Image (cartoon, rainbow, N blue to C red):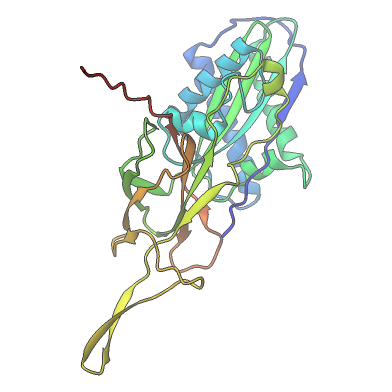
Length: 322
């Protein structure tokens, strides 16, 4: 099973605003801008027969904070100076679902009017949708058929405007969410279930080094992001059945094509439970739960991007007398 990783690129524009009004963000302006951006997104999705996405207010707040940090740090795109990838940032802010990010940045020598802000939204969406394969990462993110929600991040100050679209894939209800930070590499327990109409297909755990601070020029040079290739894959246990044999009954468990019998149990009601191994030492482990529409052979959906930070355990101080 392969995960299709979307290539997403930053749009950097220079725009001359007209009359500077009300720098910063009143709640009313912010809410109106978000509503307009979601309207544009759903208009474009409807052209391709895709279901609309709903605005996720909590994710929008997280995305606002990131946009403000970008202006403060002088960065654009998917990274700022803390070195955290978008899925880490989303997860560490409390997110439990799958996420894909689009980002755009505008600059001017003076402030932005309300009219200019609306124009930048419309022009950003139009530029993303005008992309042509194979360099169409923004467009494919907007047209992700599995997206269910979107968070809209906005910040503007002193002629700098940052915006993000955080597309969310909500297909898992977590009964025991994963921790976000642990100080040792012991397995961590989780449990949940796929939403109605979907089945858990697999769980992959991706490992990478701890993020490192970086200069703004380094962050701005990173055009794409993806989960690391280093990963471990875990599969549901297959069903067991019994058969009559000479002298009694034998229990048989189905096997996968490579001989594996599965790693975690999925109950008849769709609930799963698993102790996620953290077997590769310190670093960031990102847990992806894959789901598939019940009874279909379509592509599996990456329904979570839960990142766990594992720090190196502090040495144990031993004291005594002699």
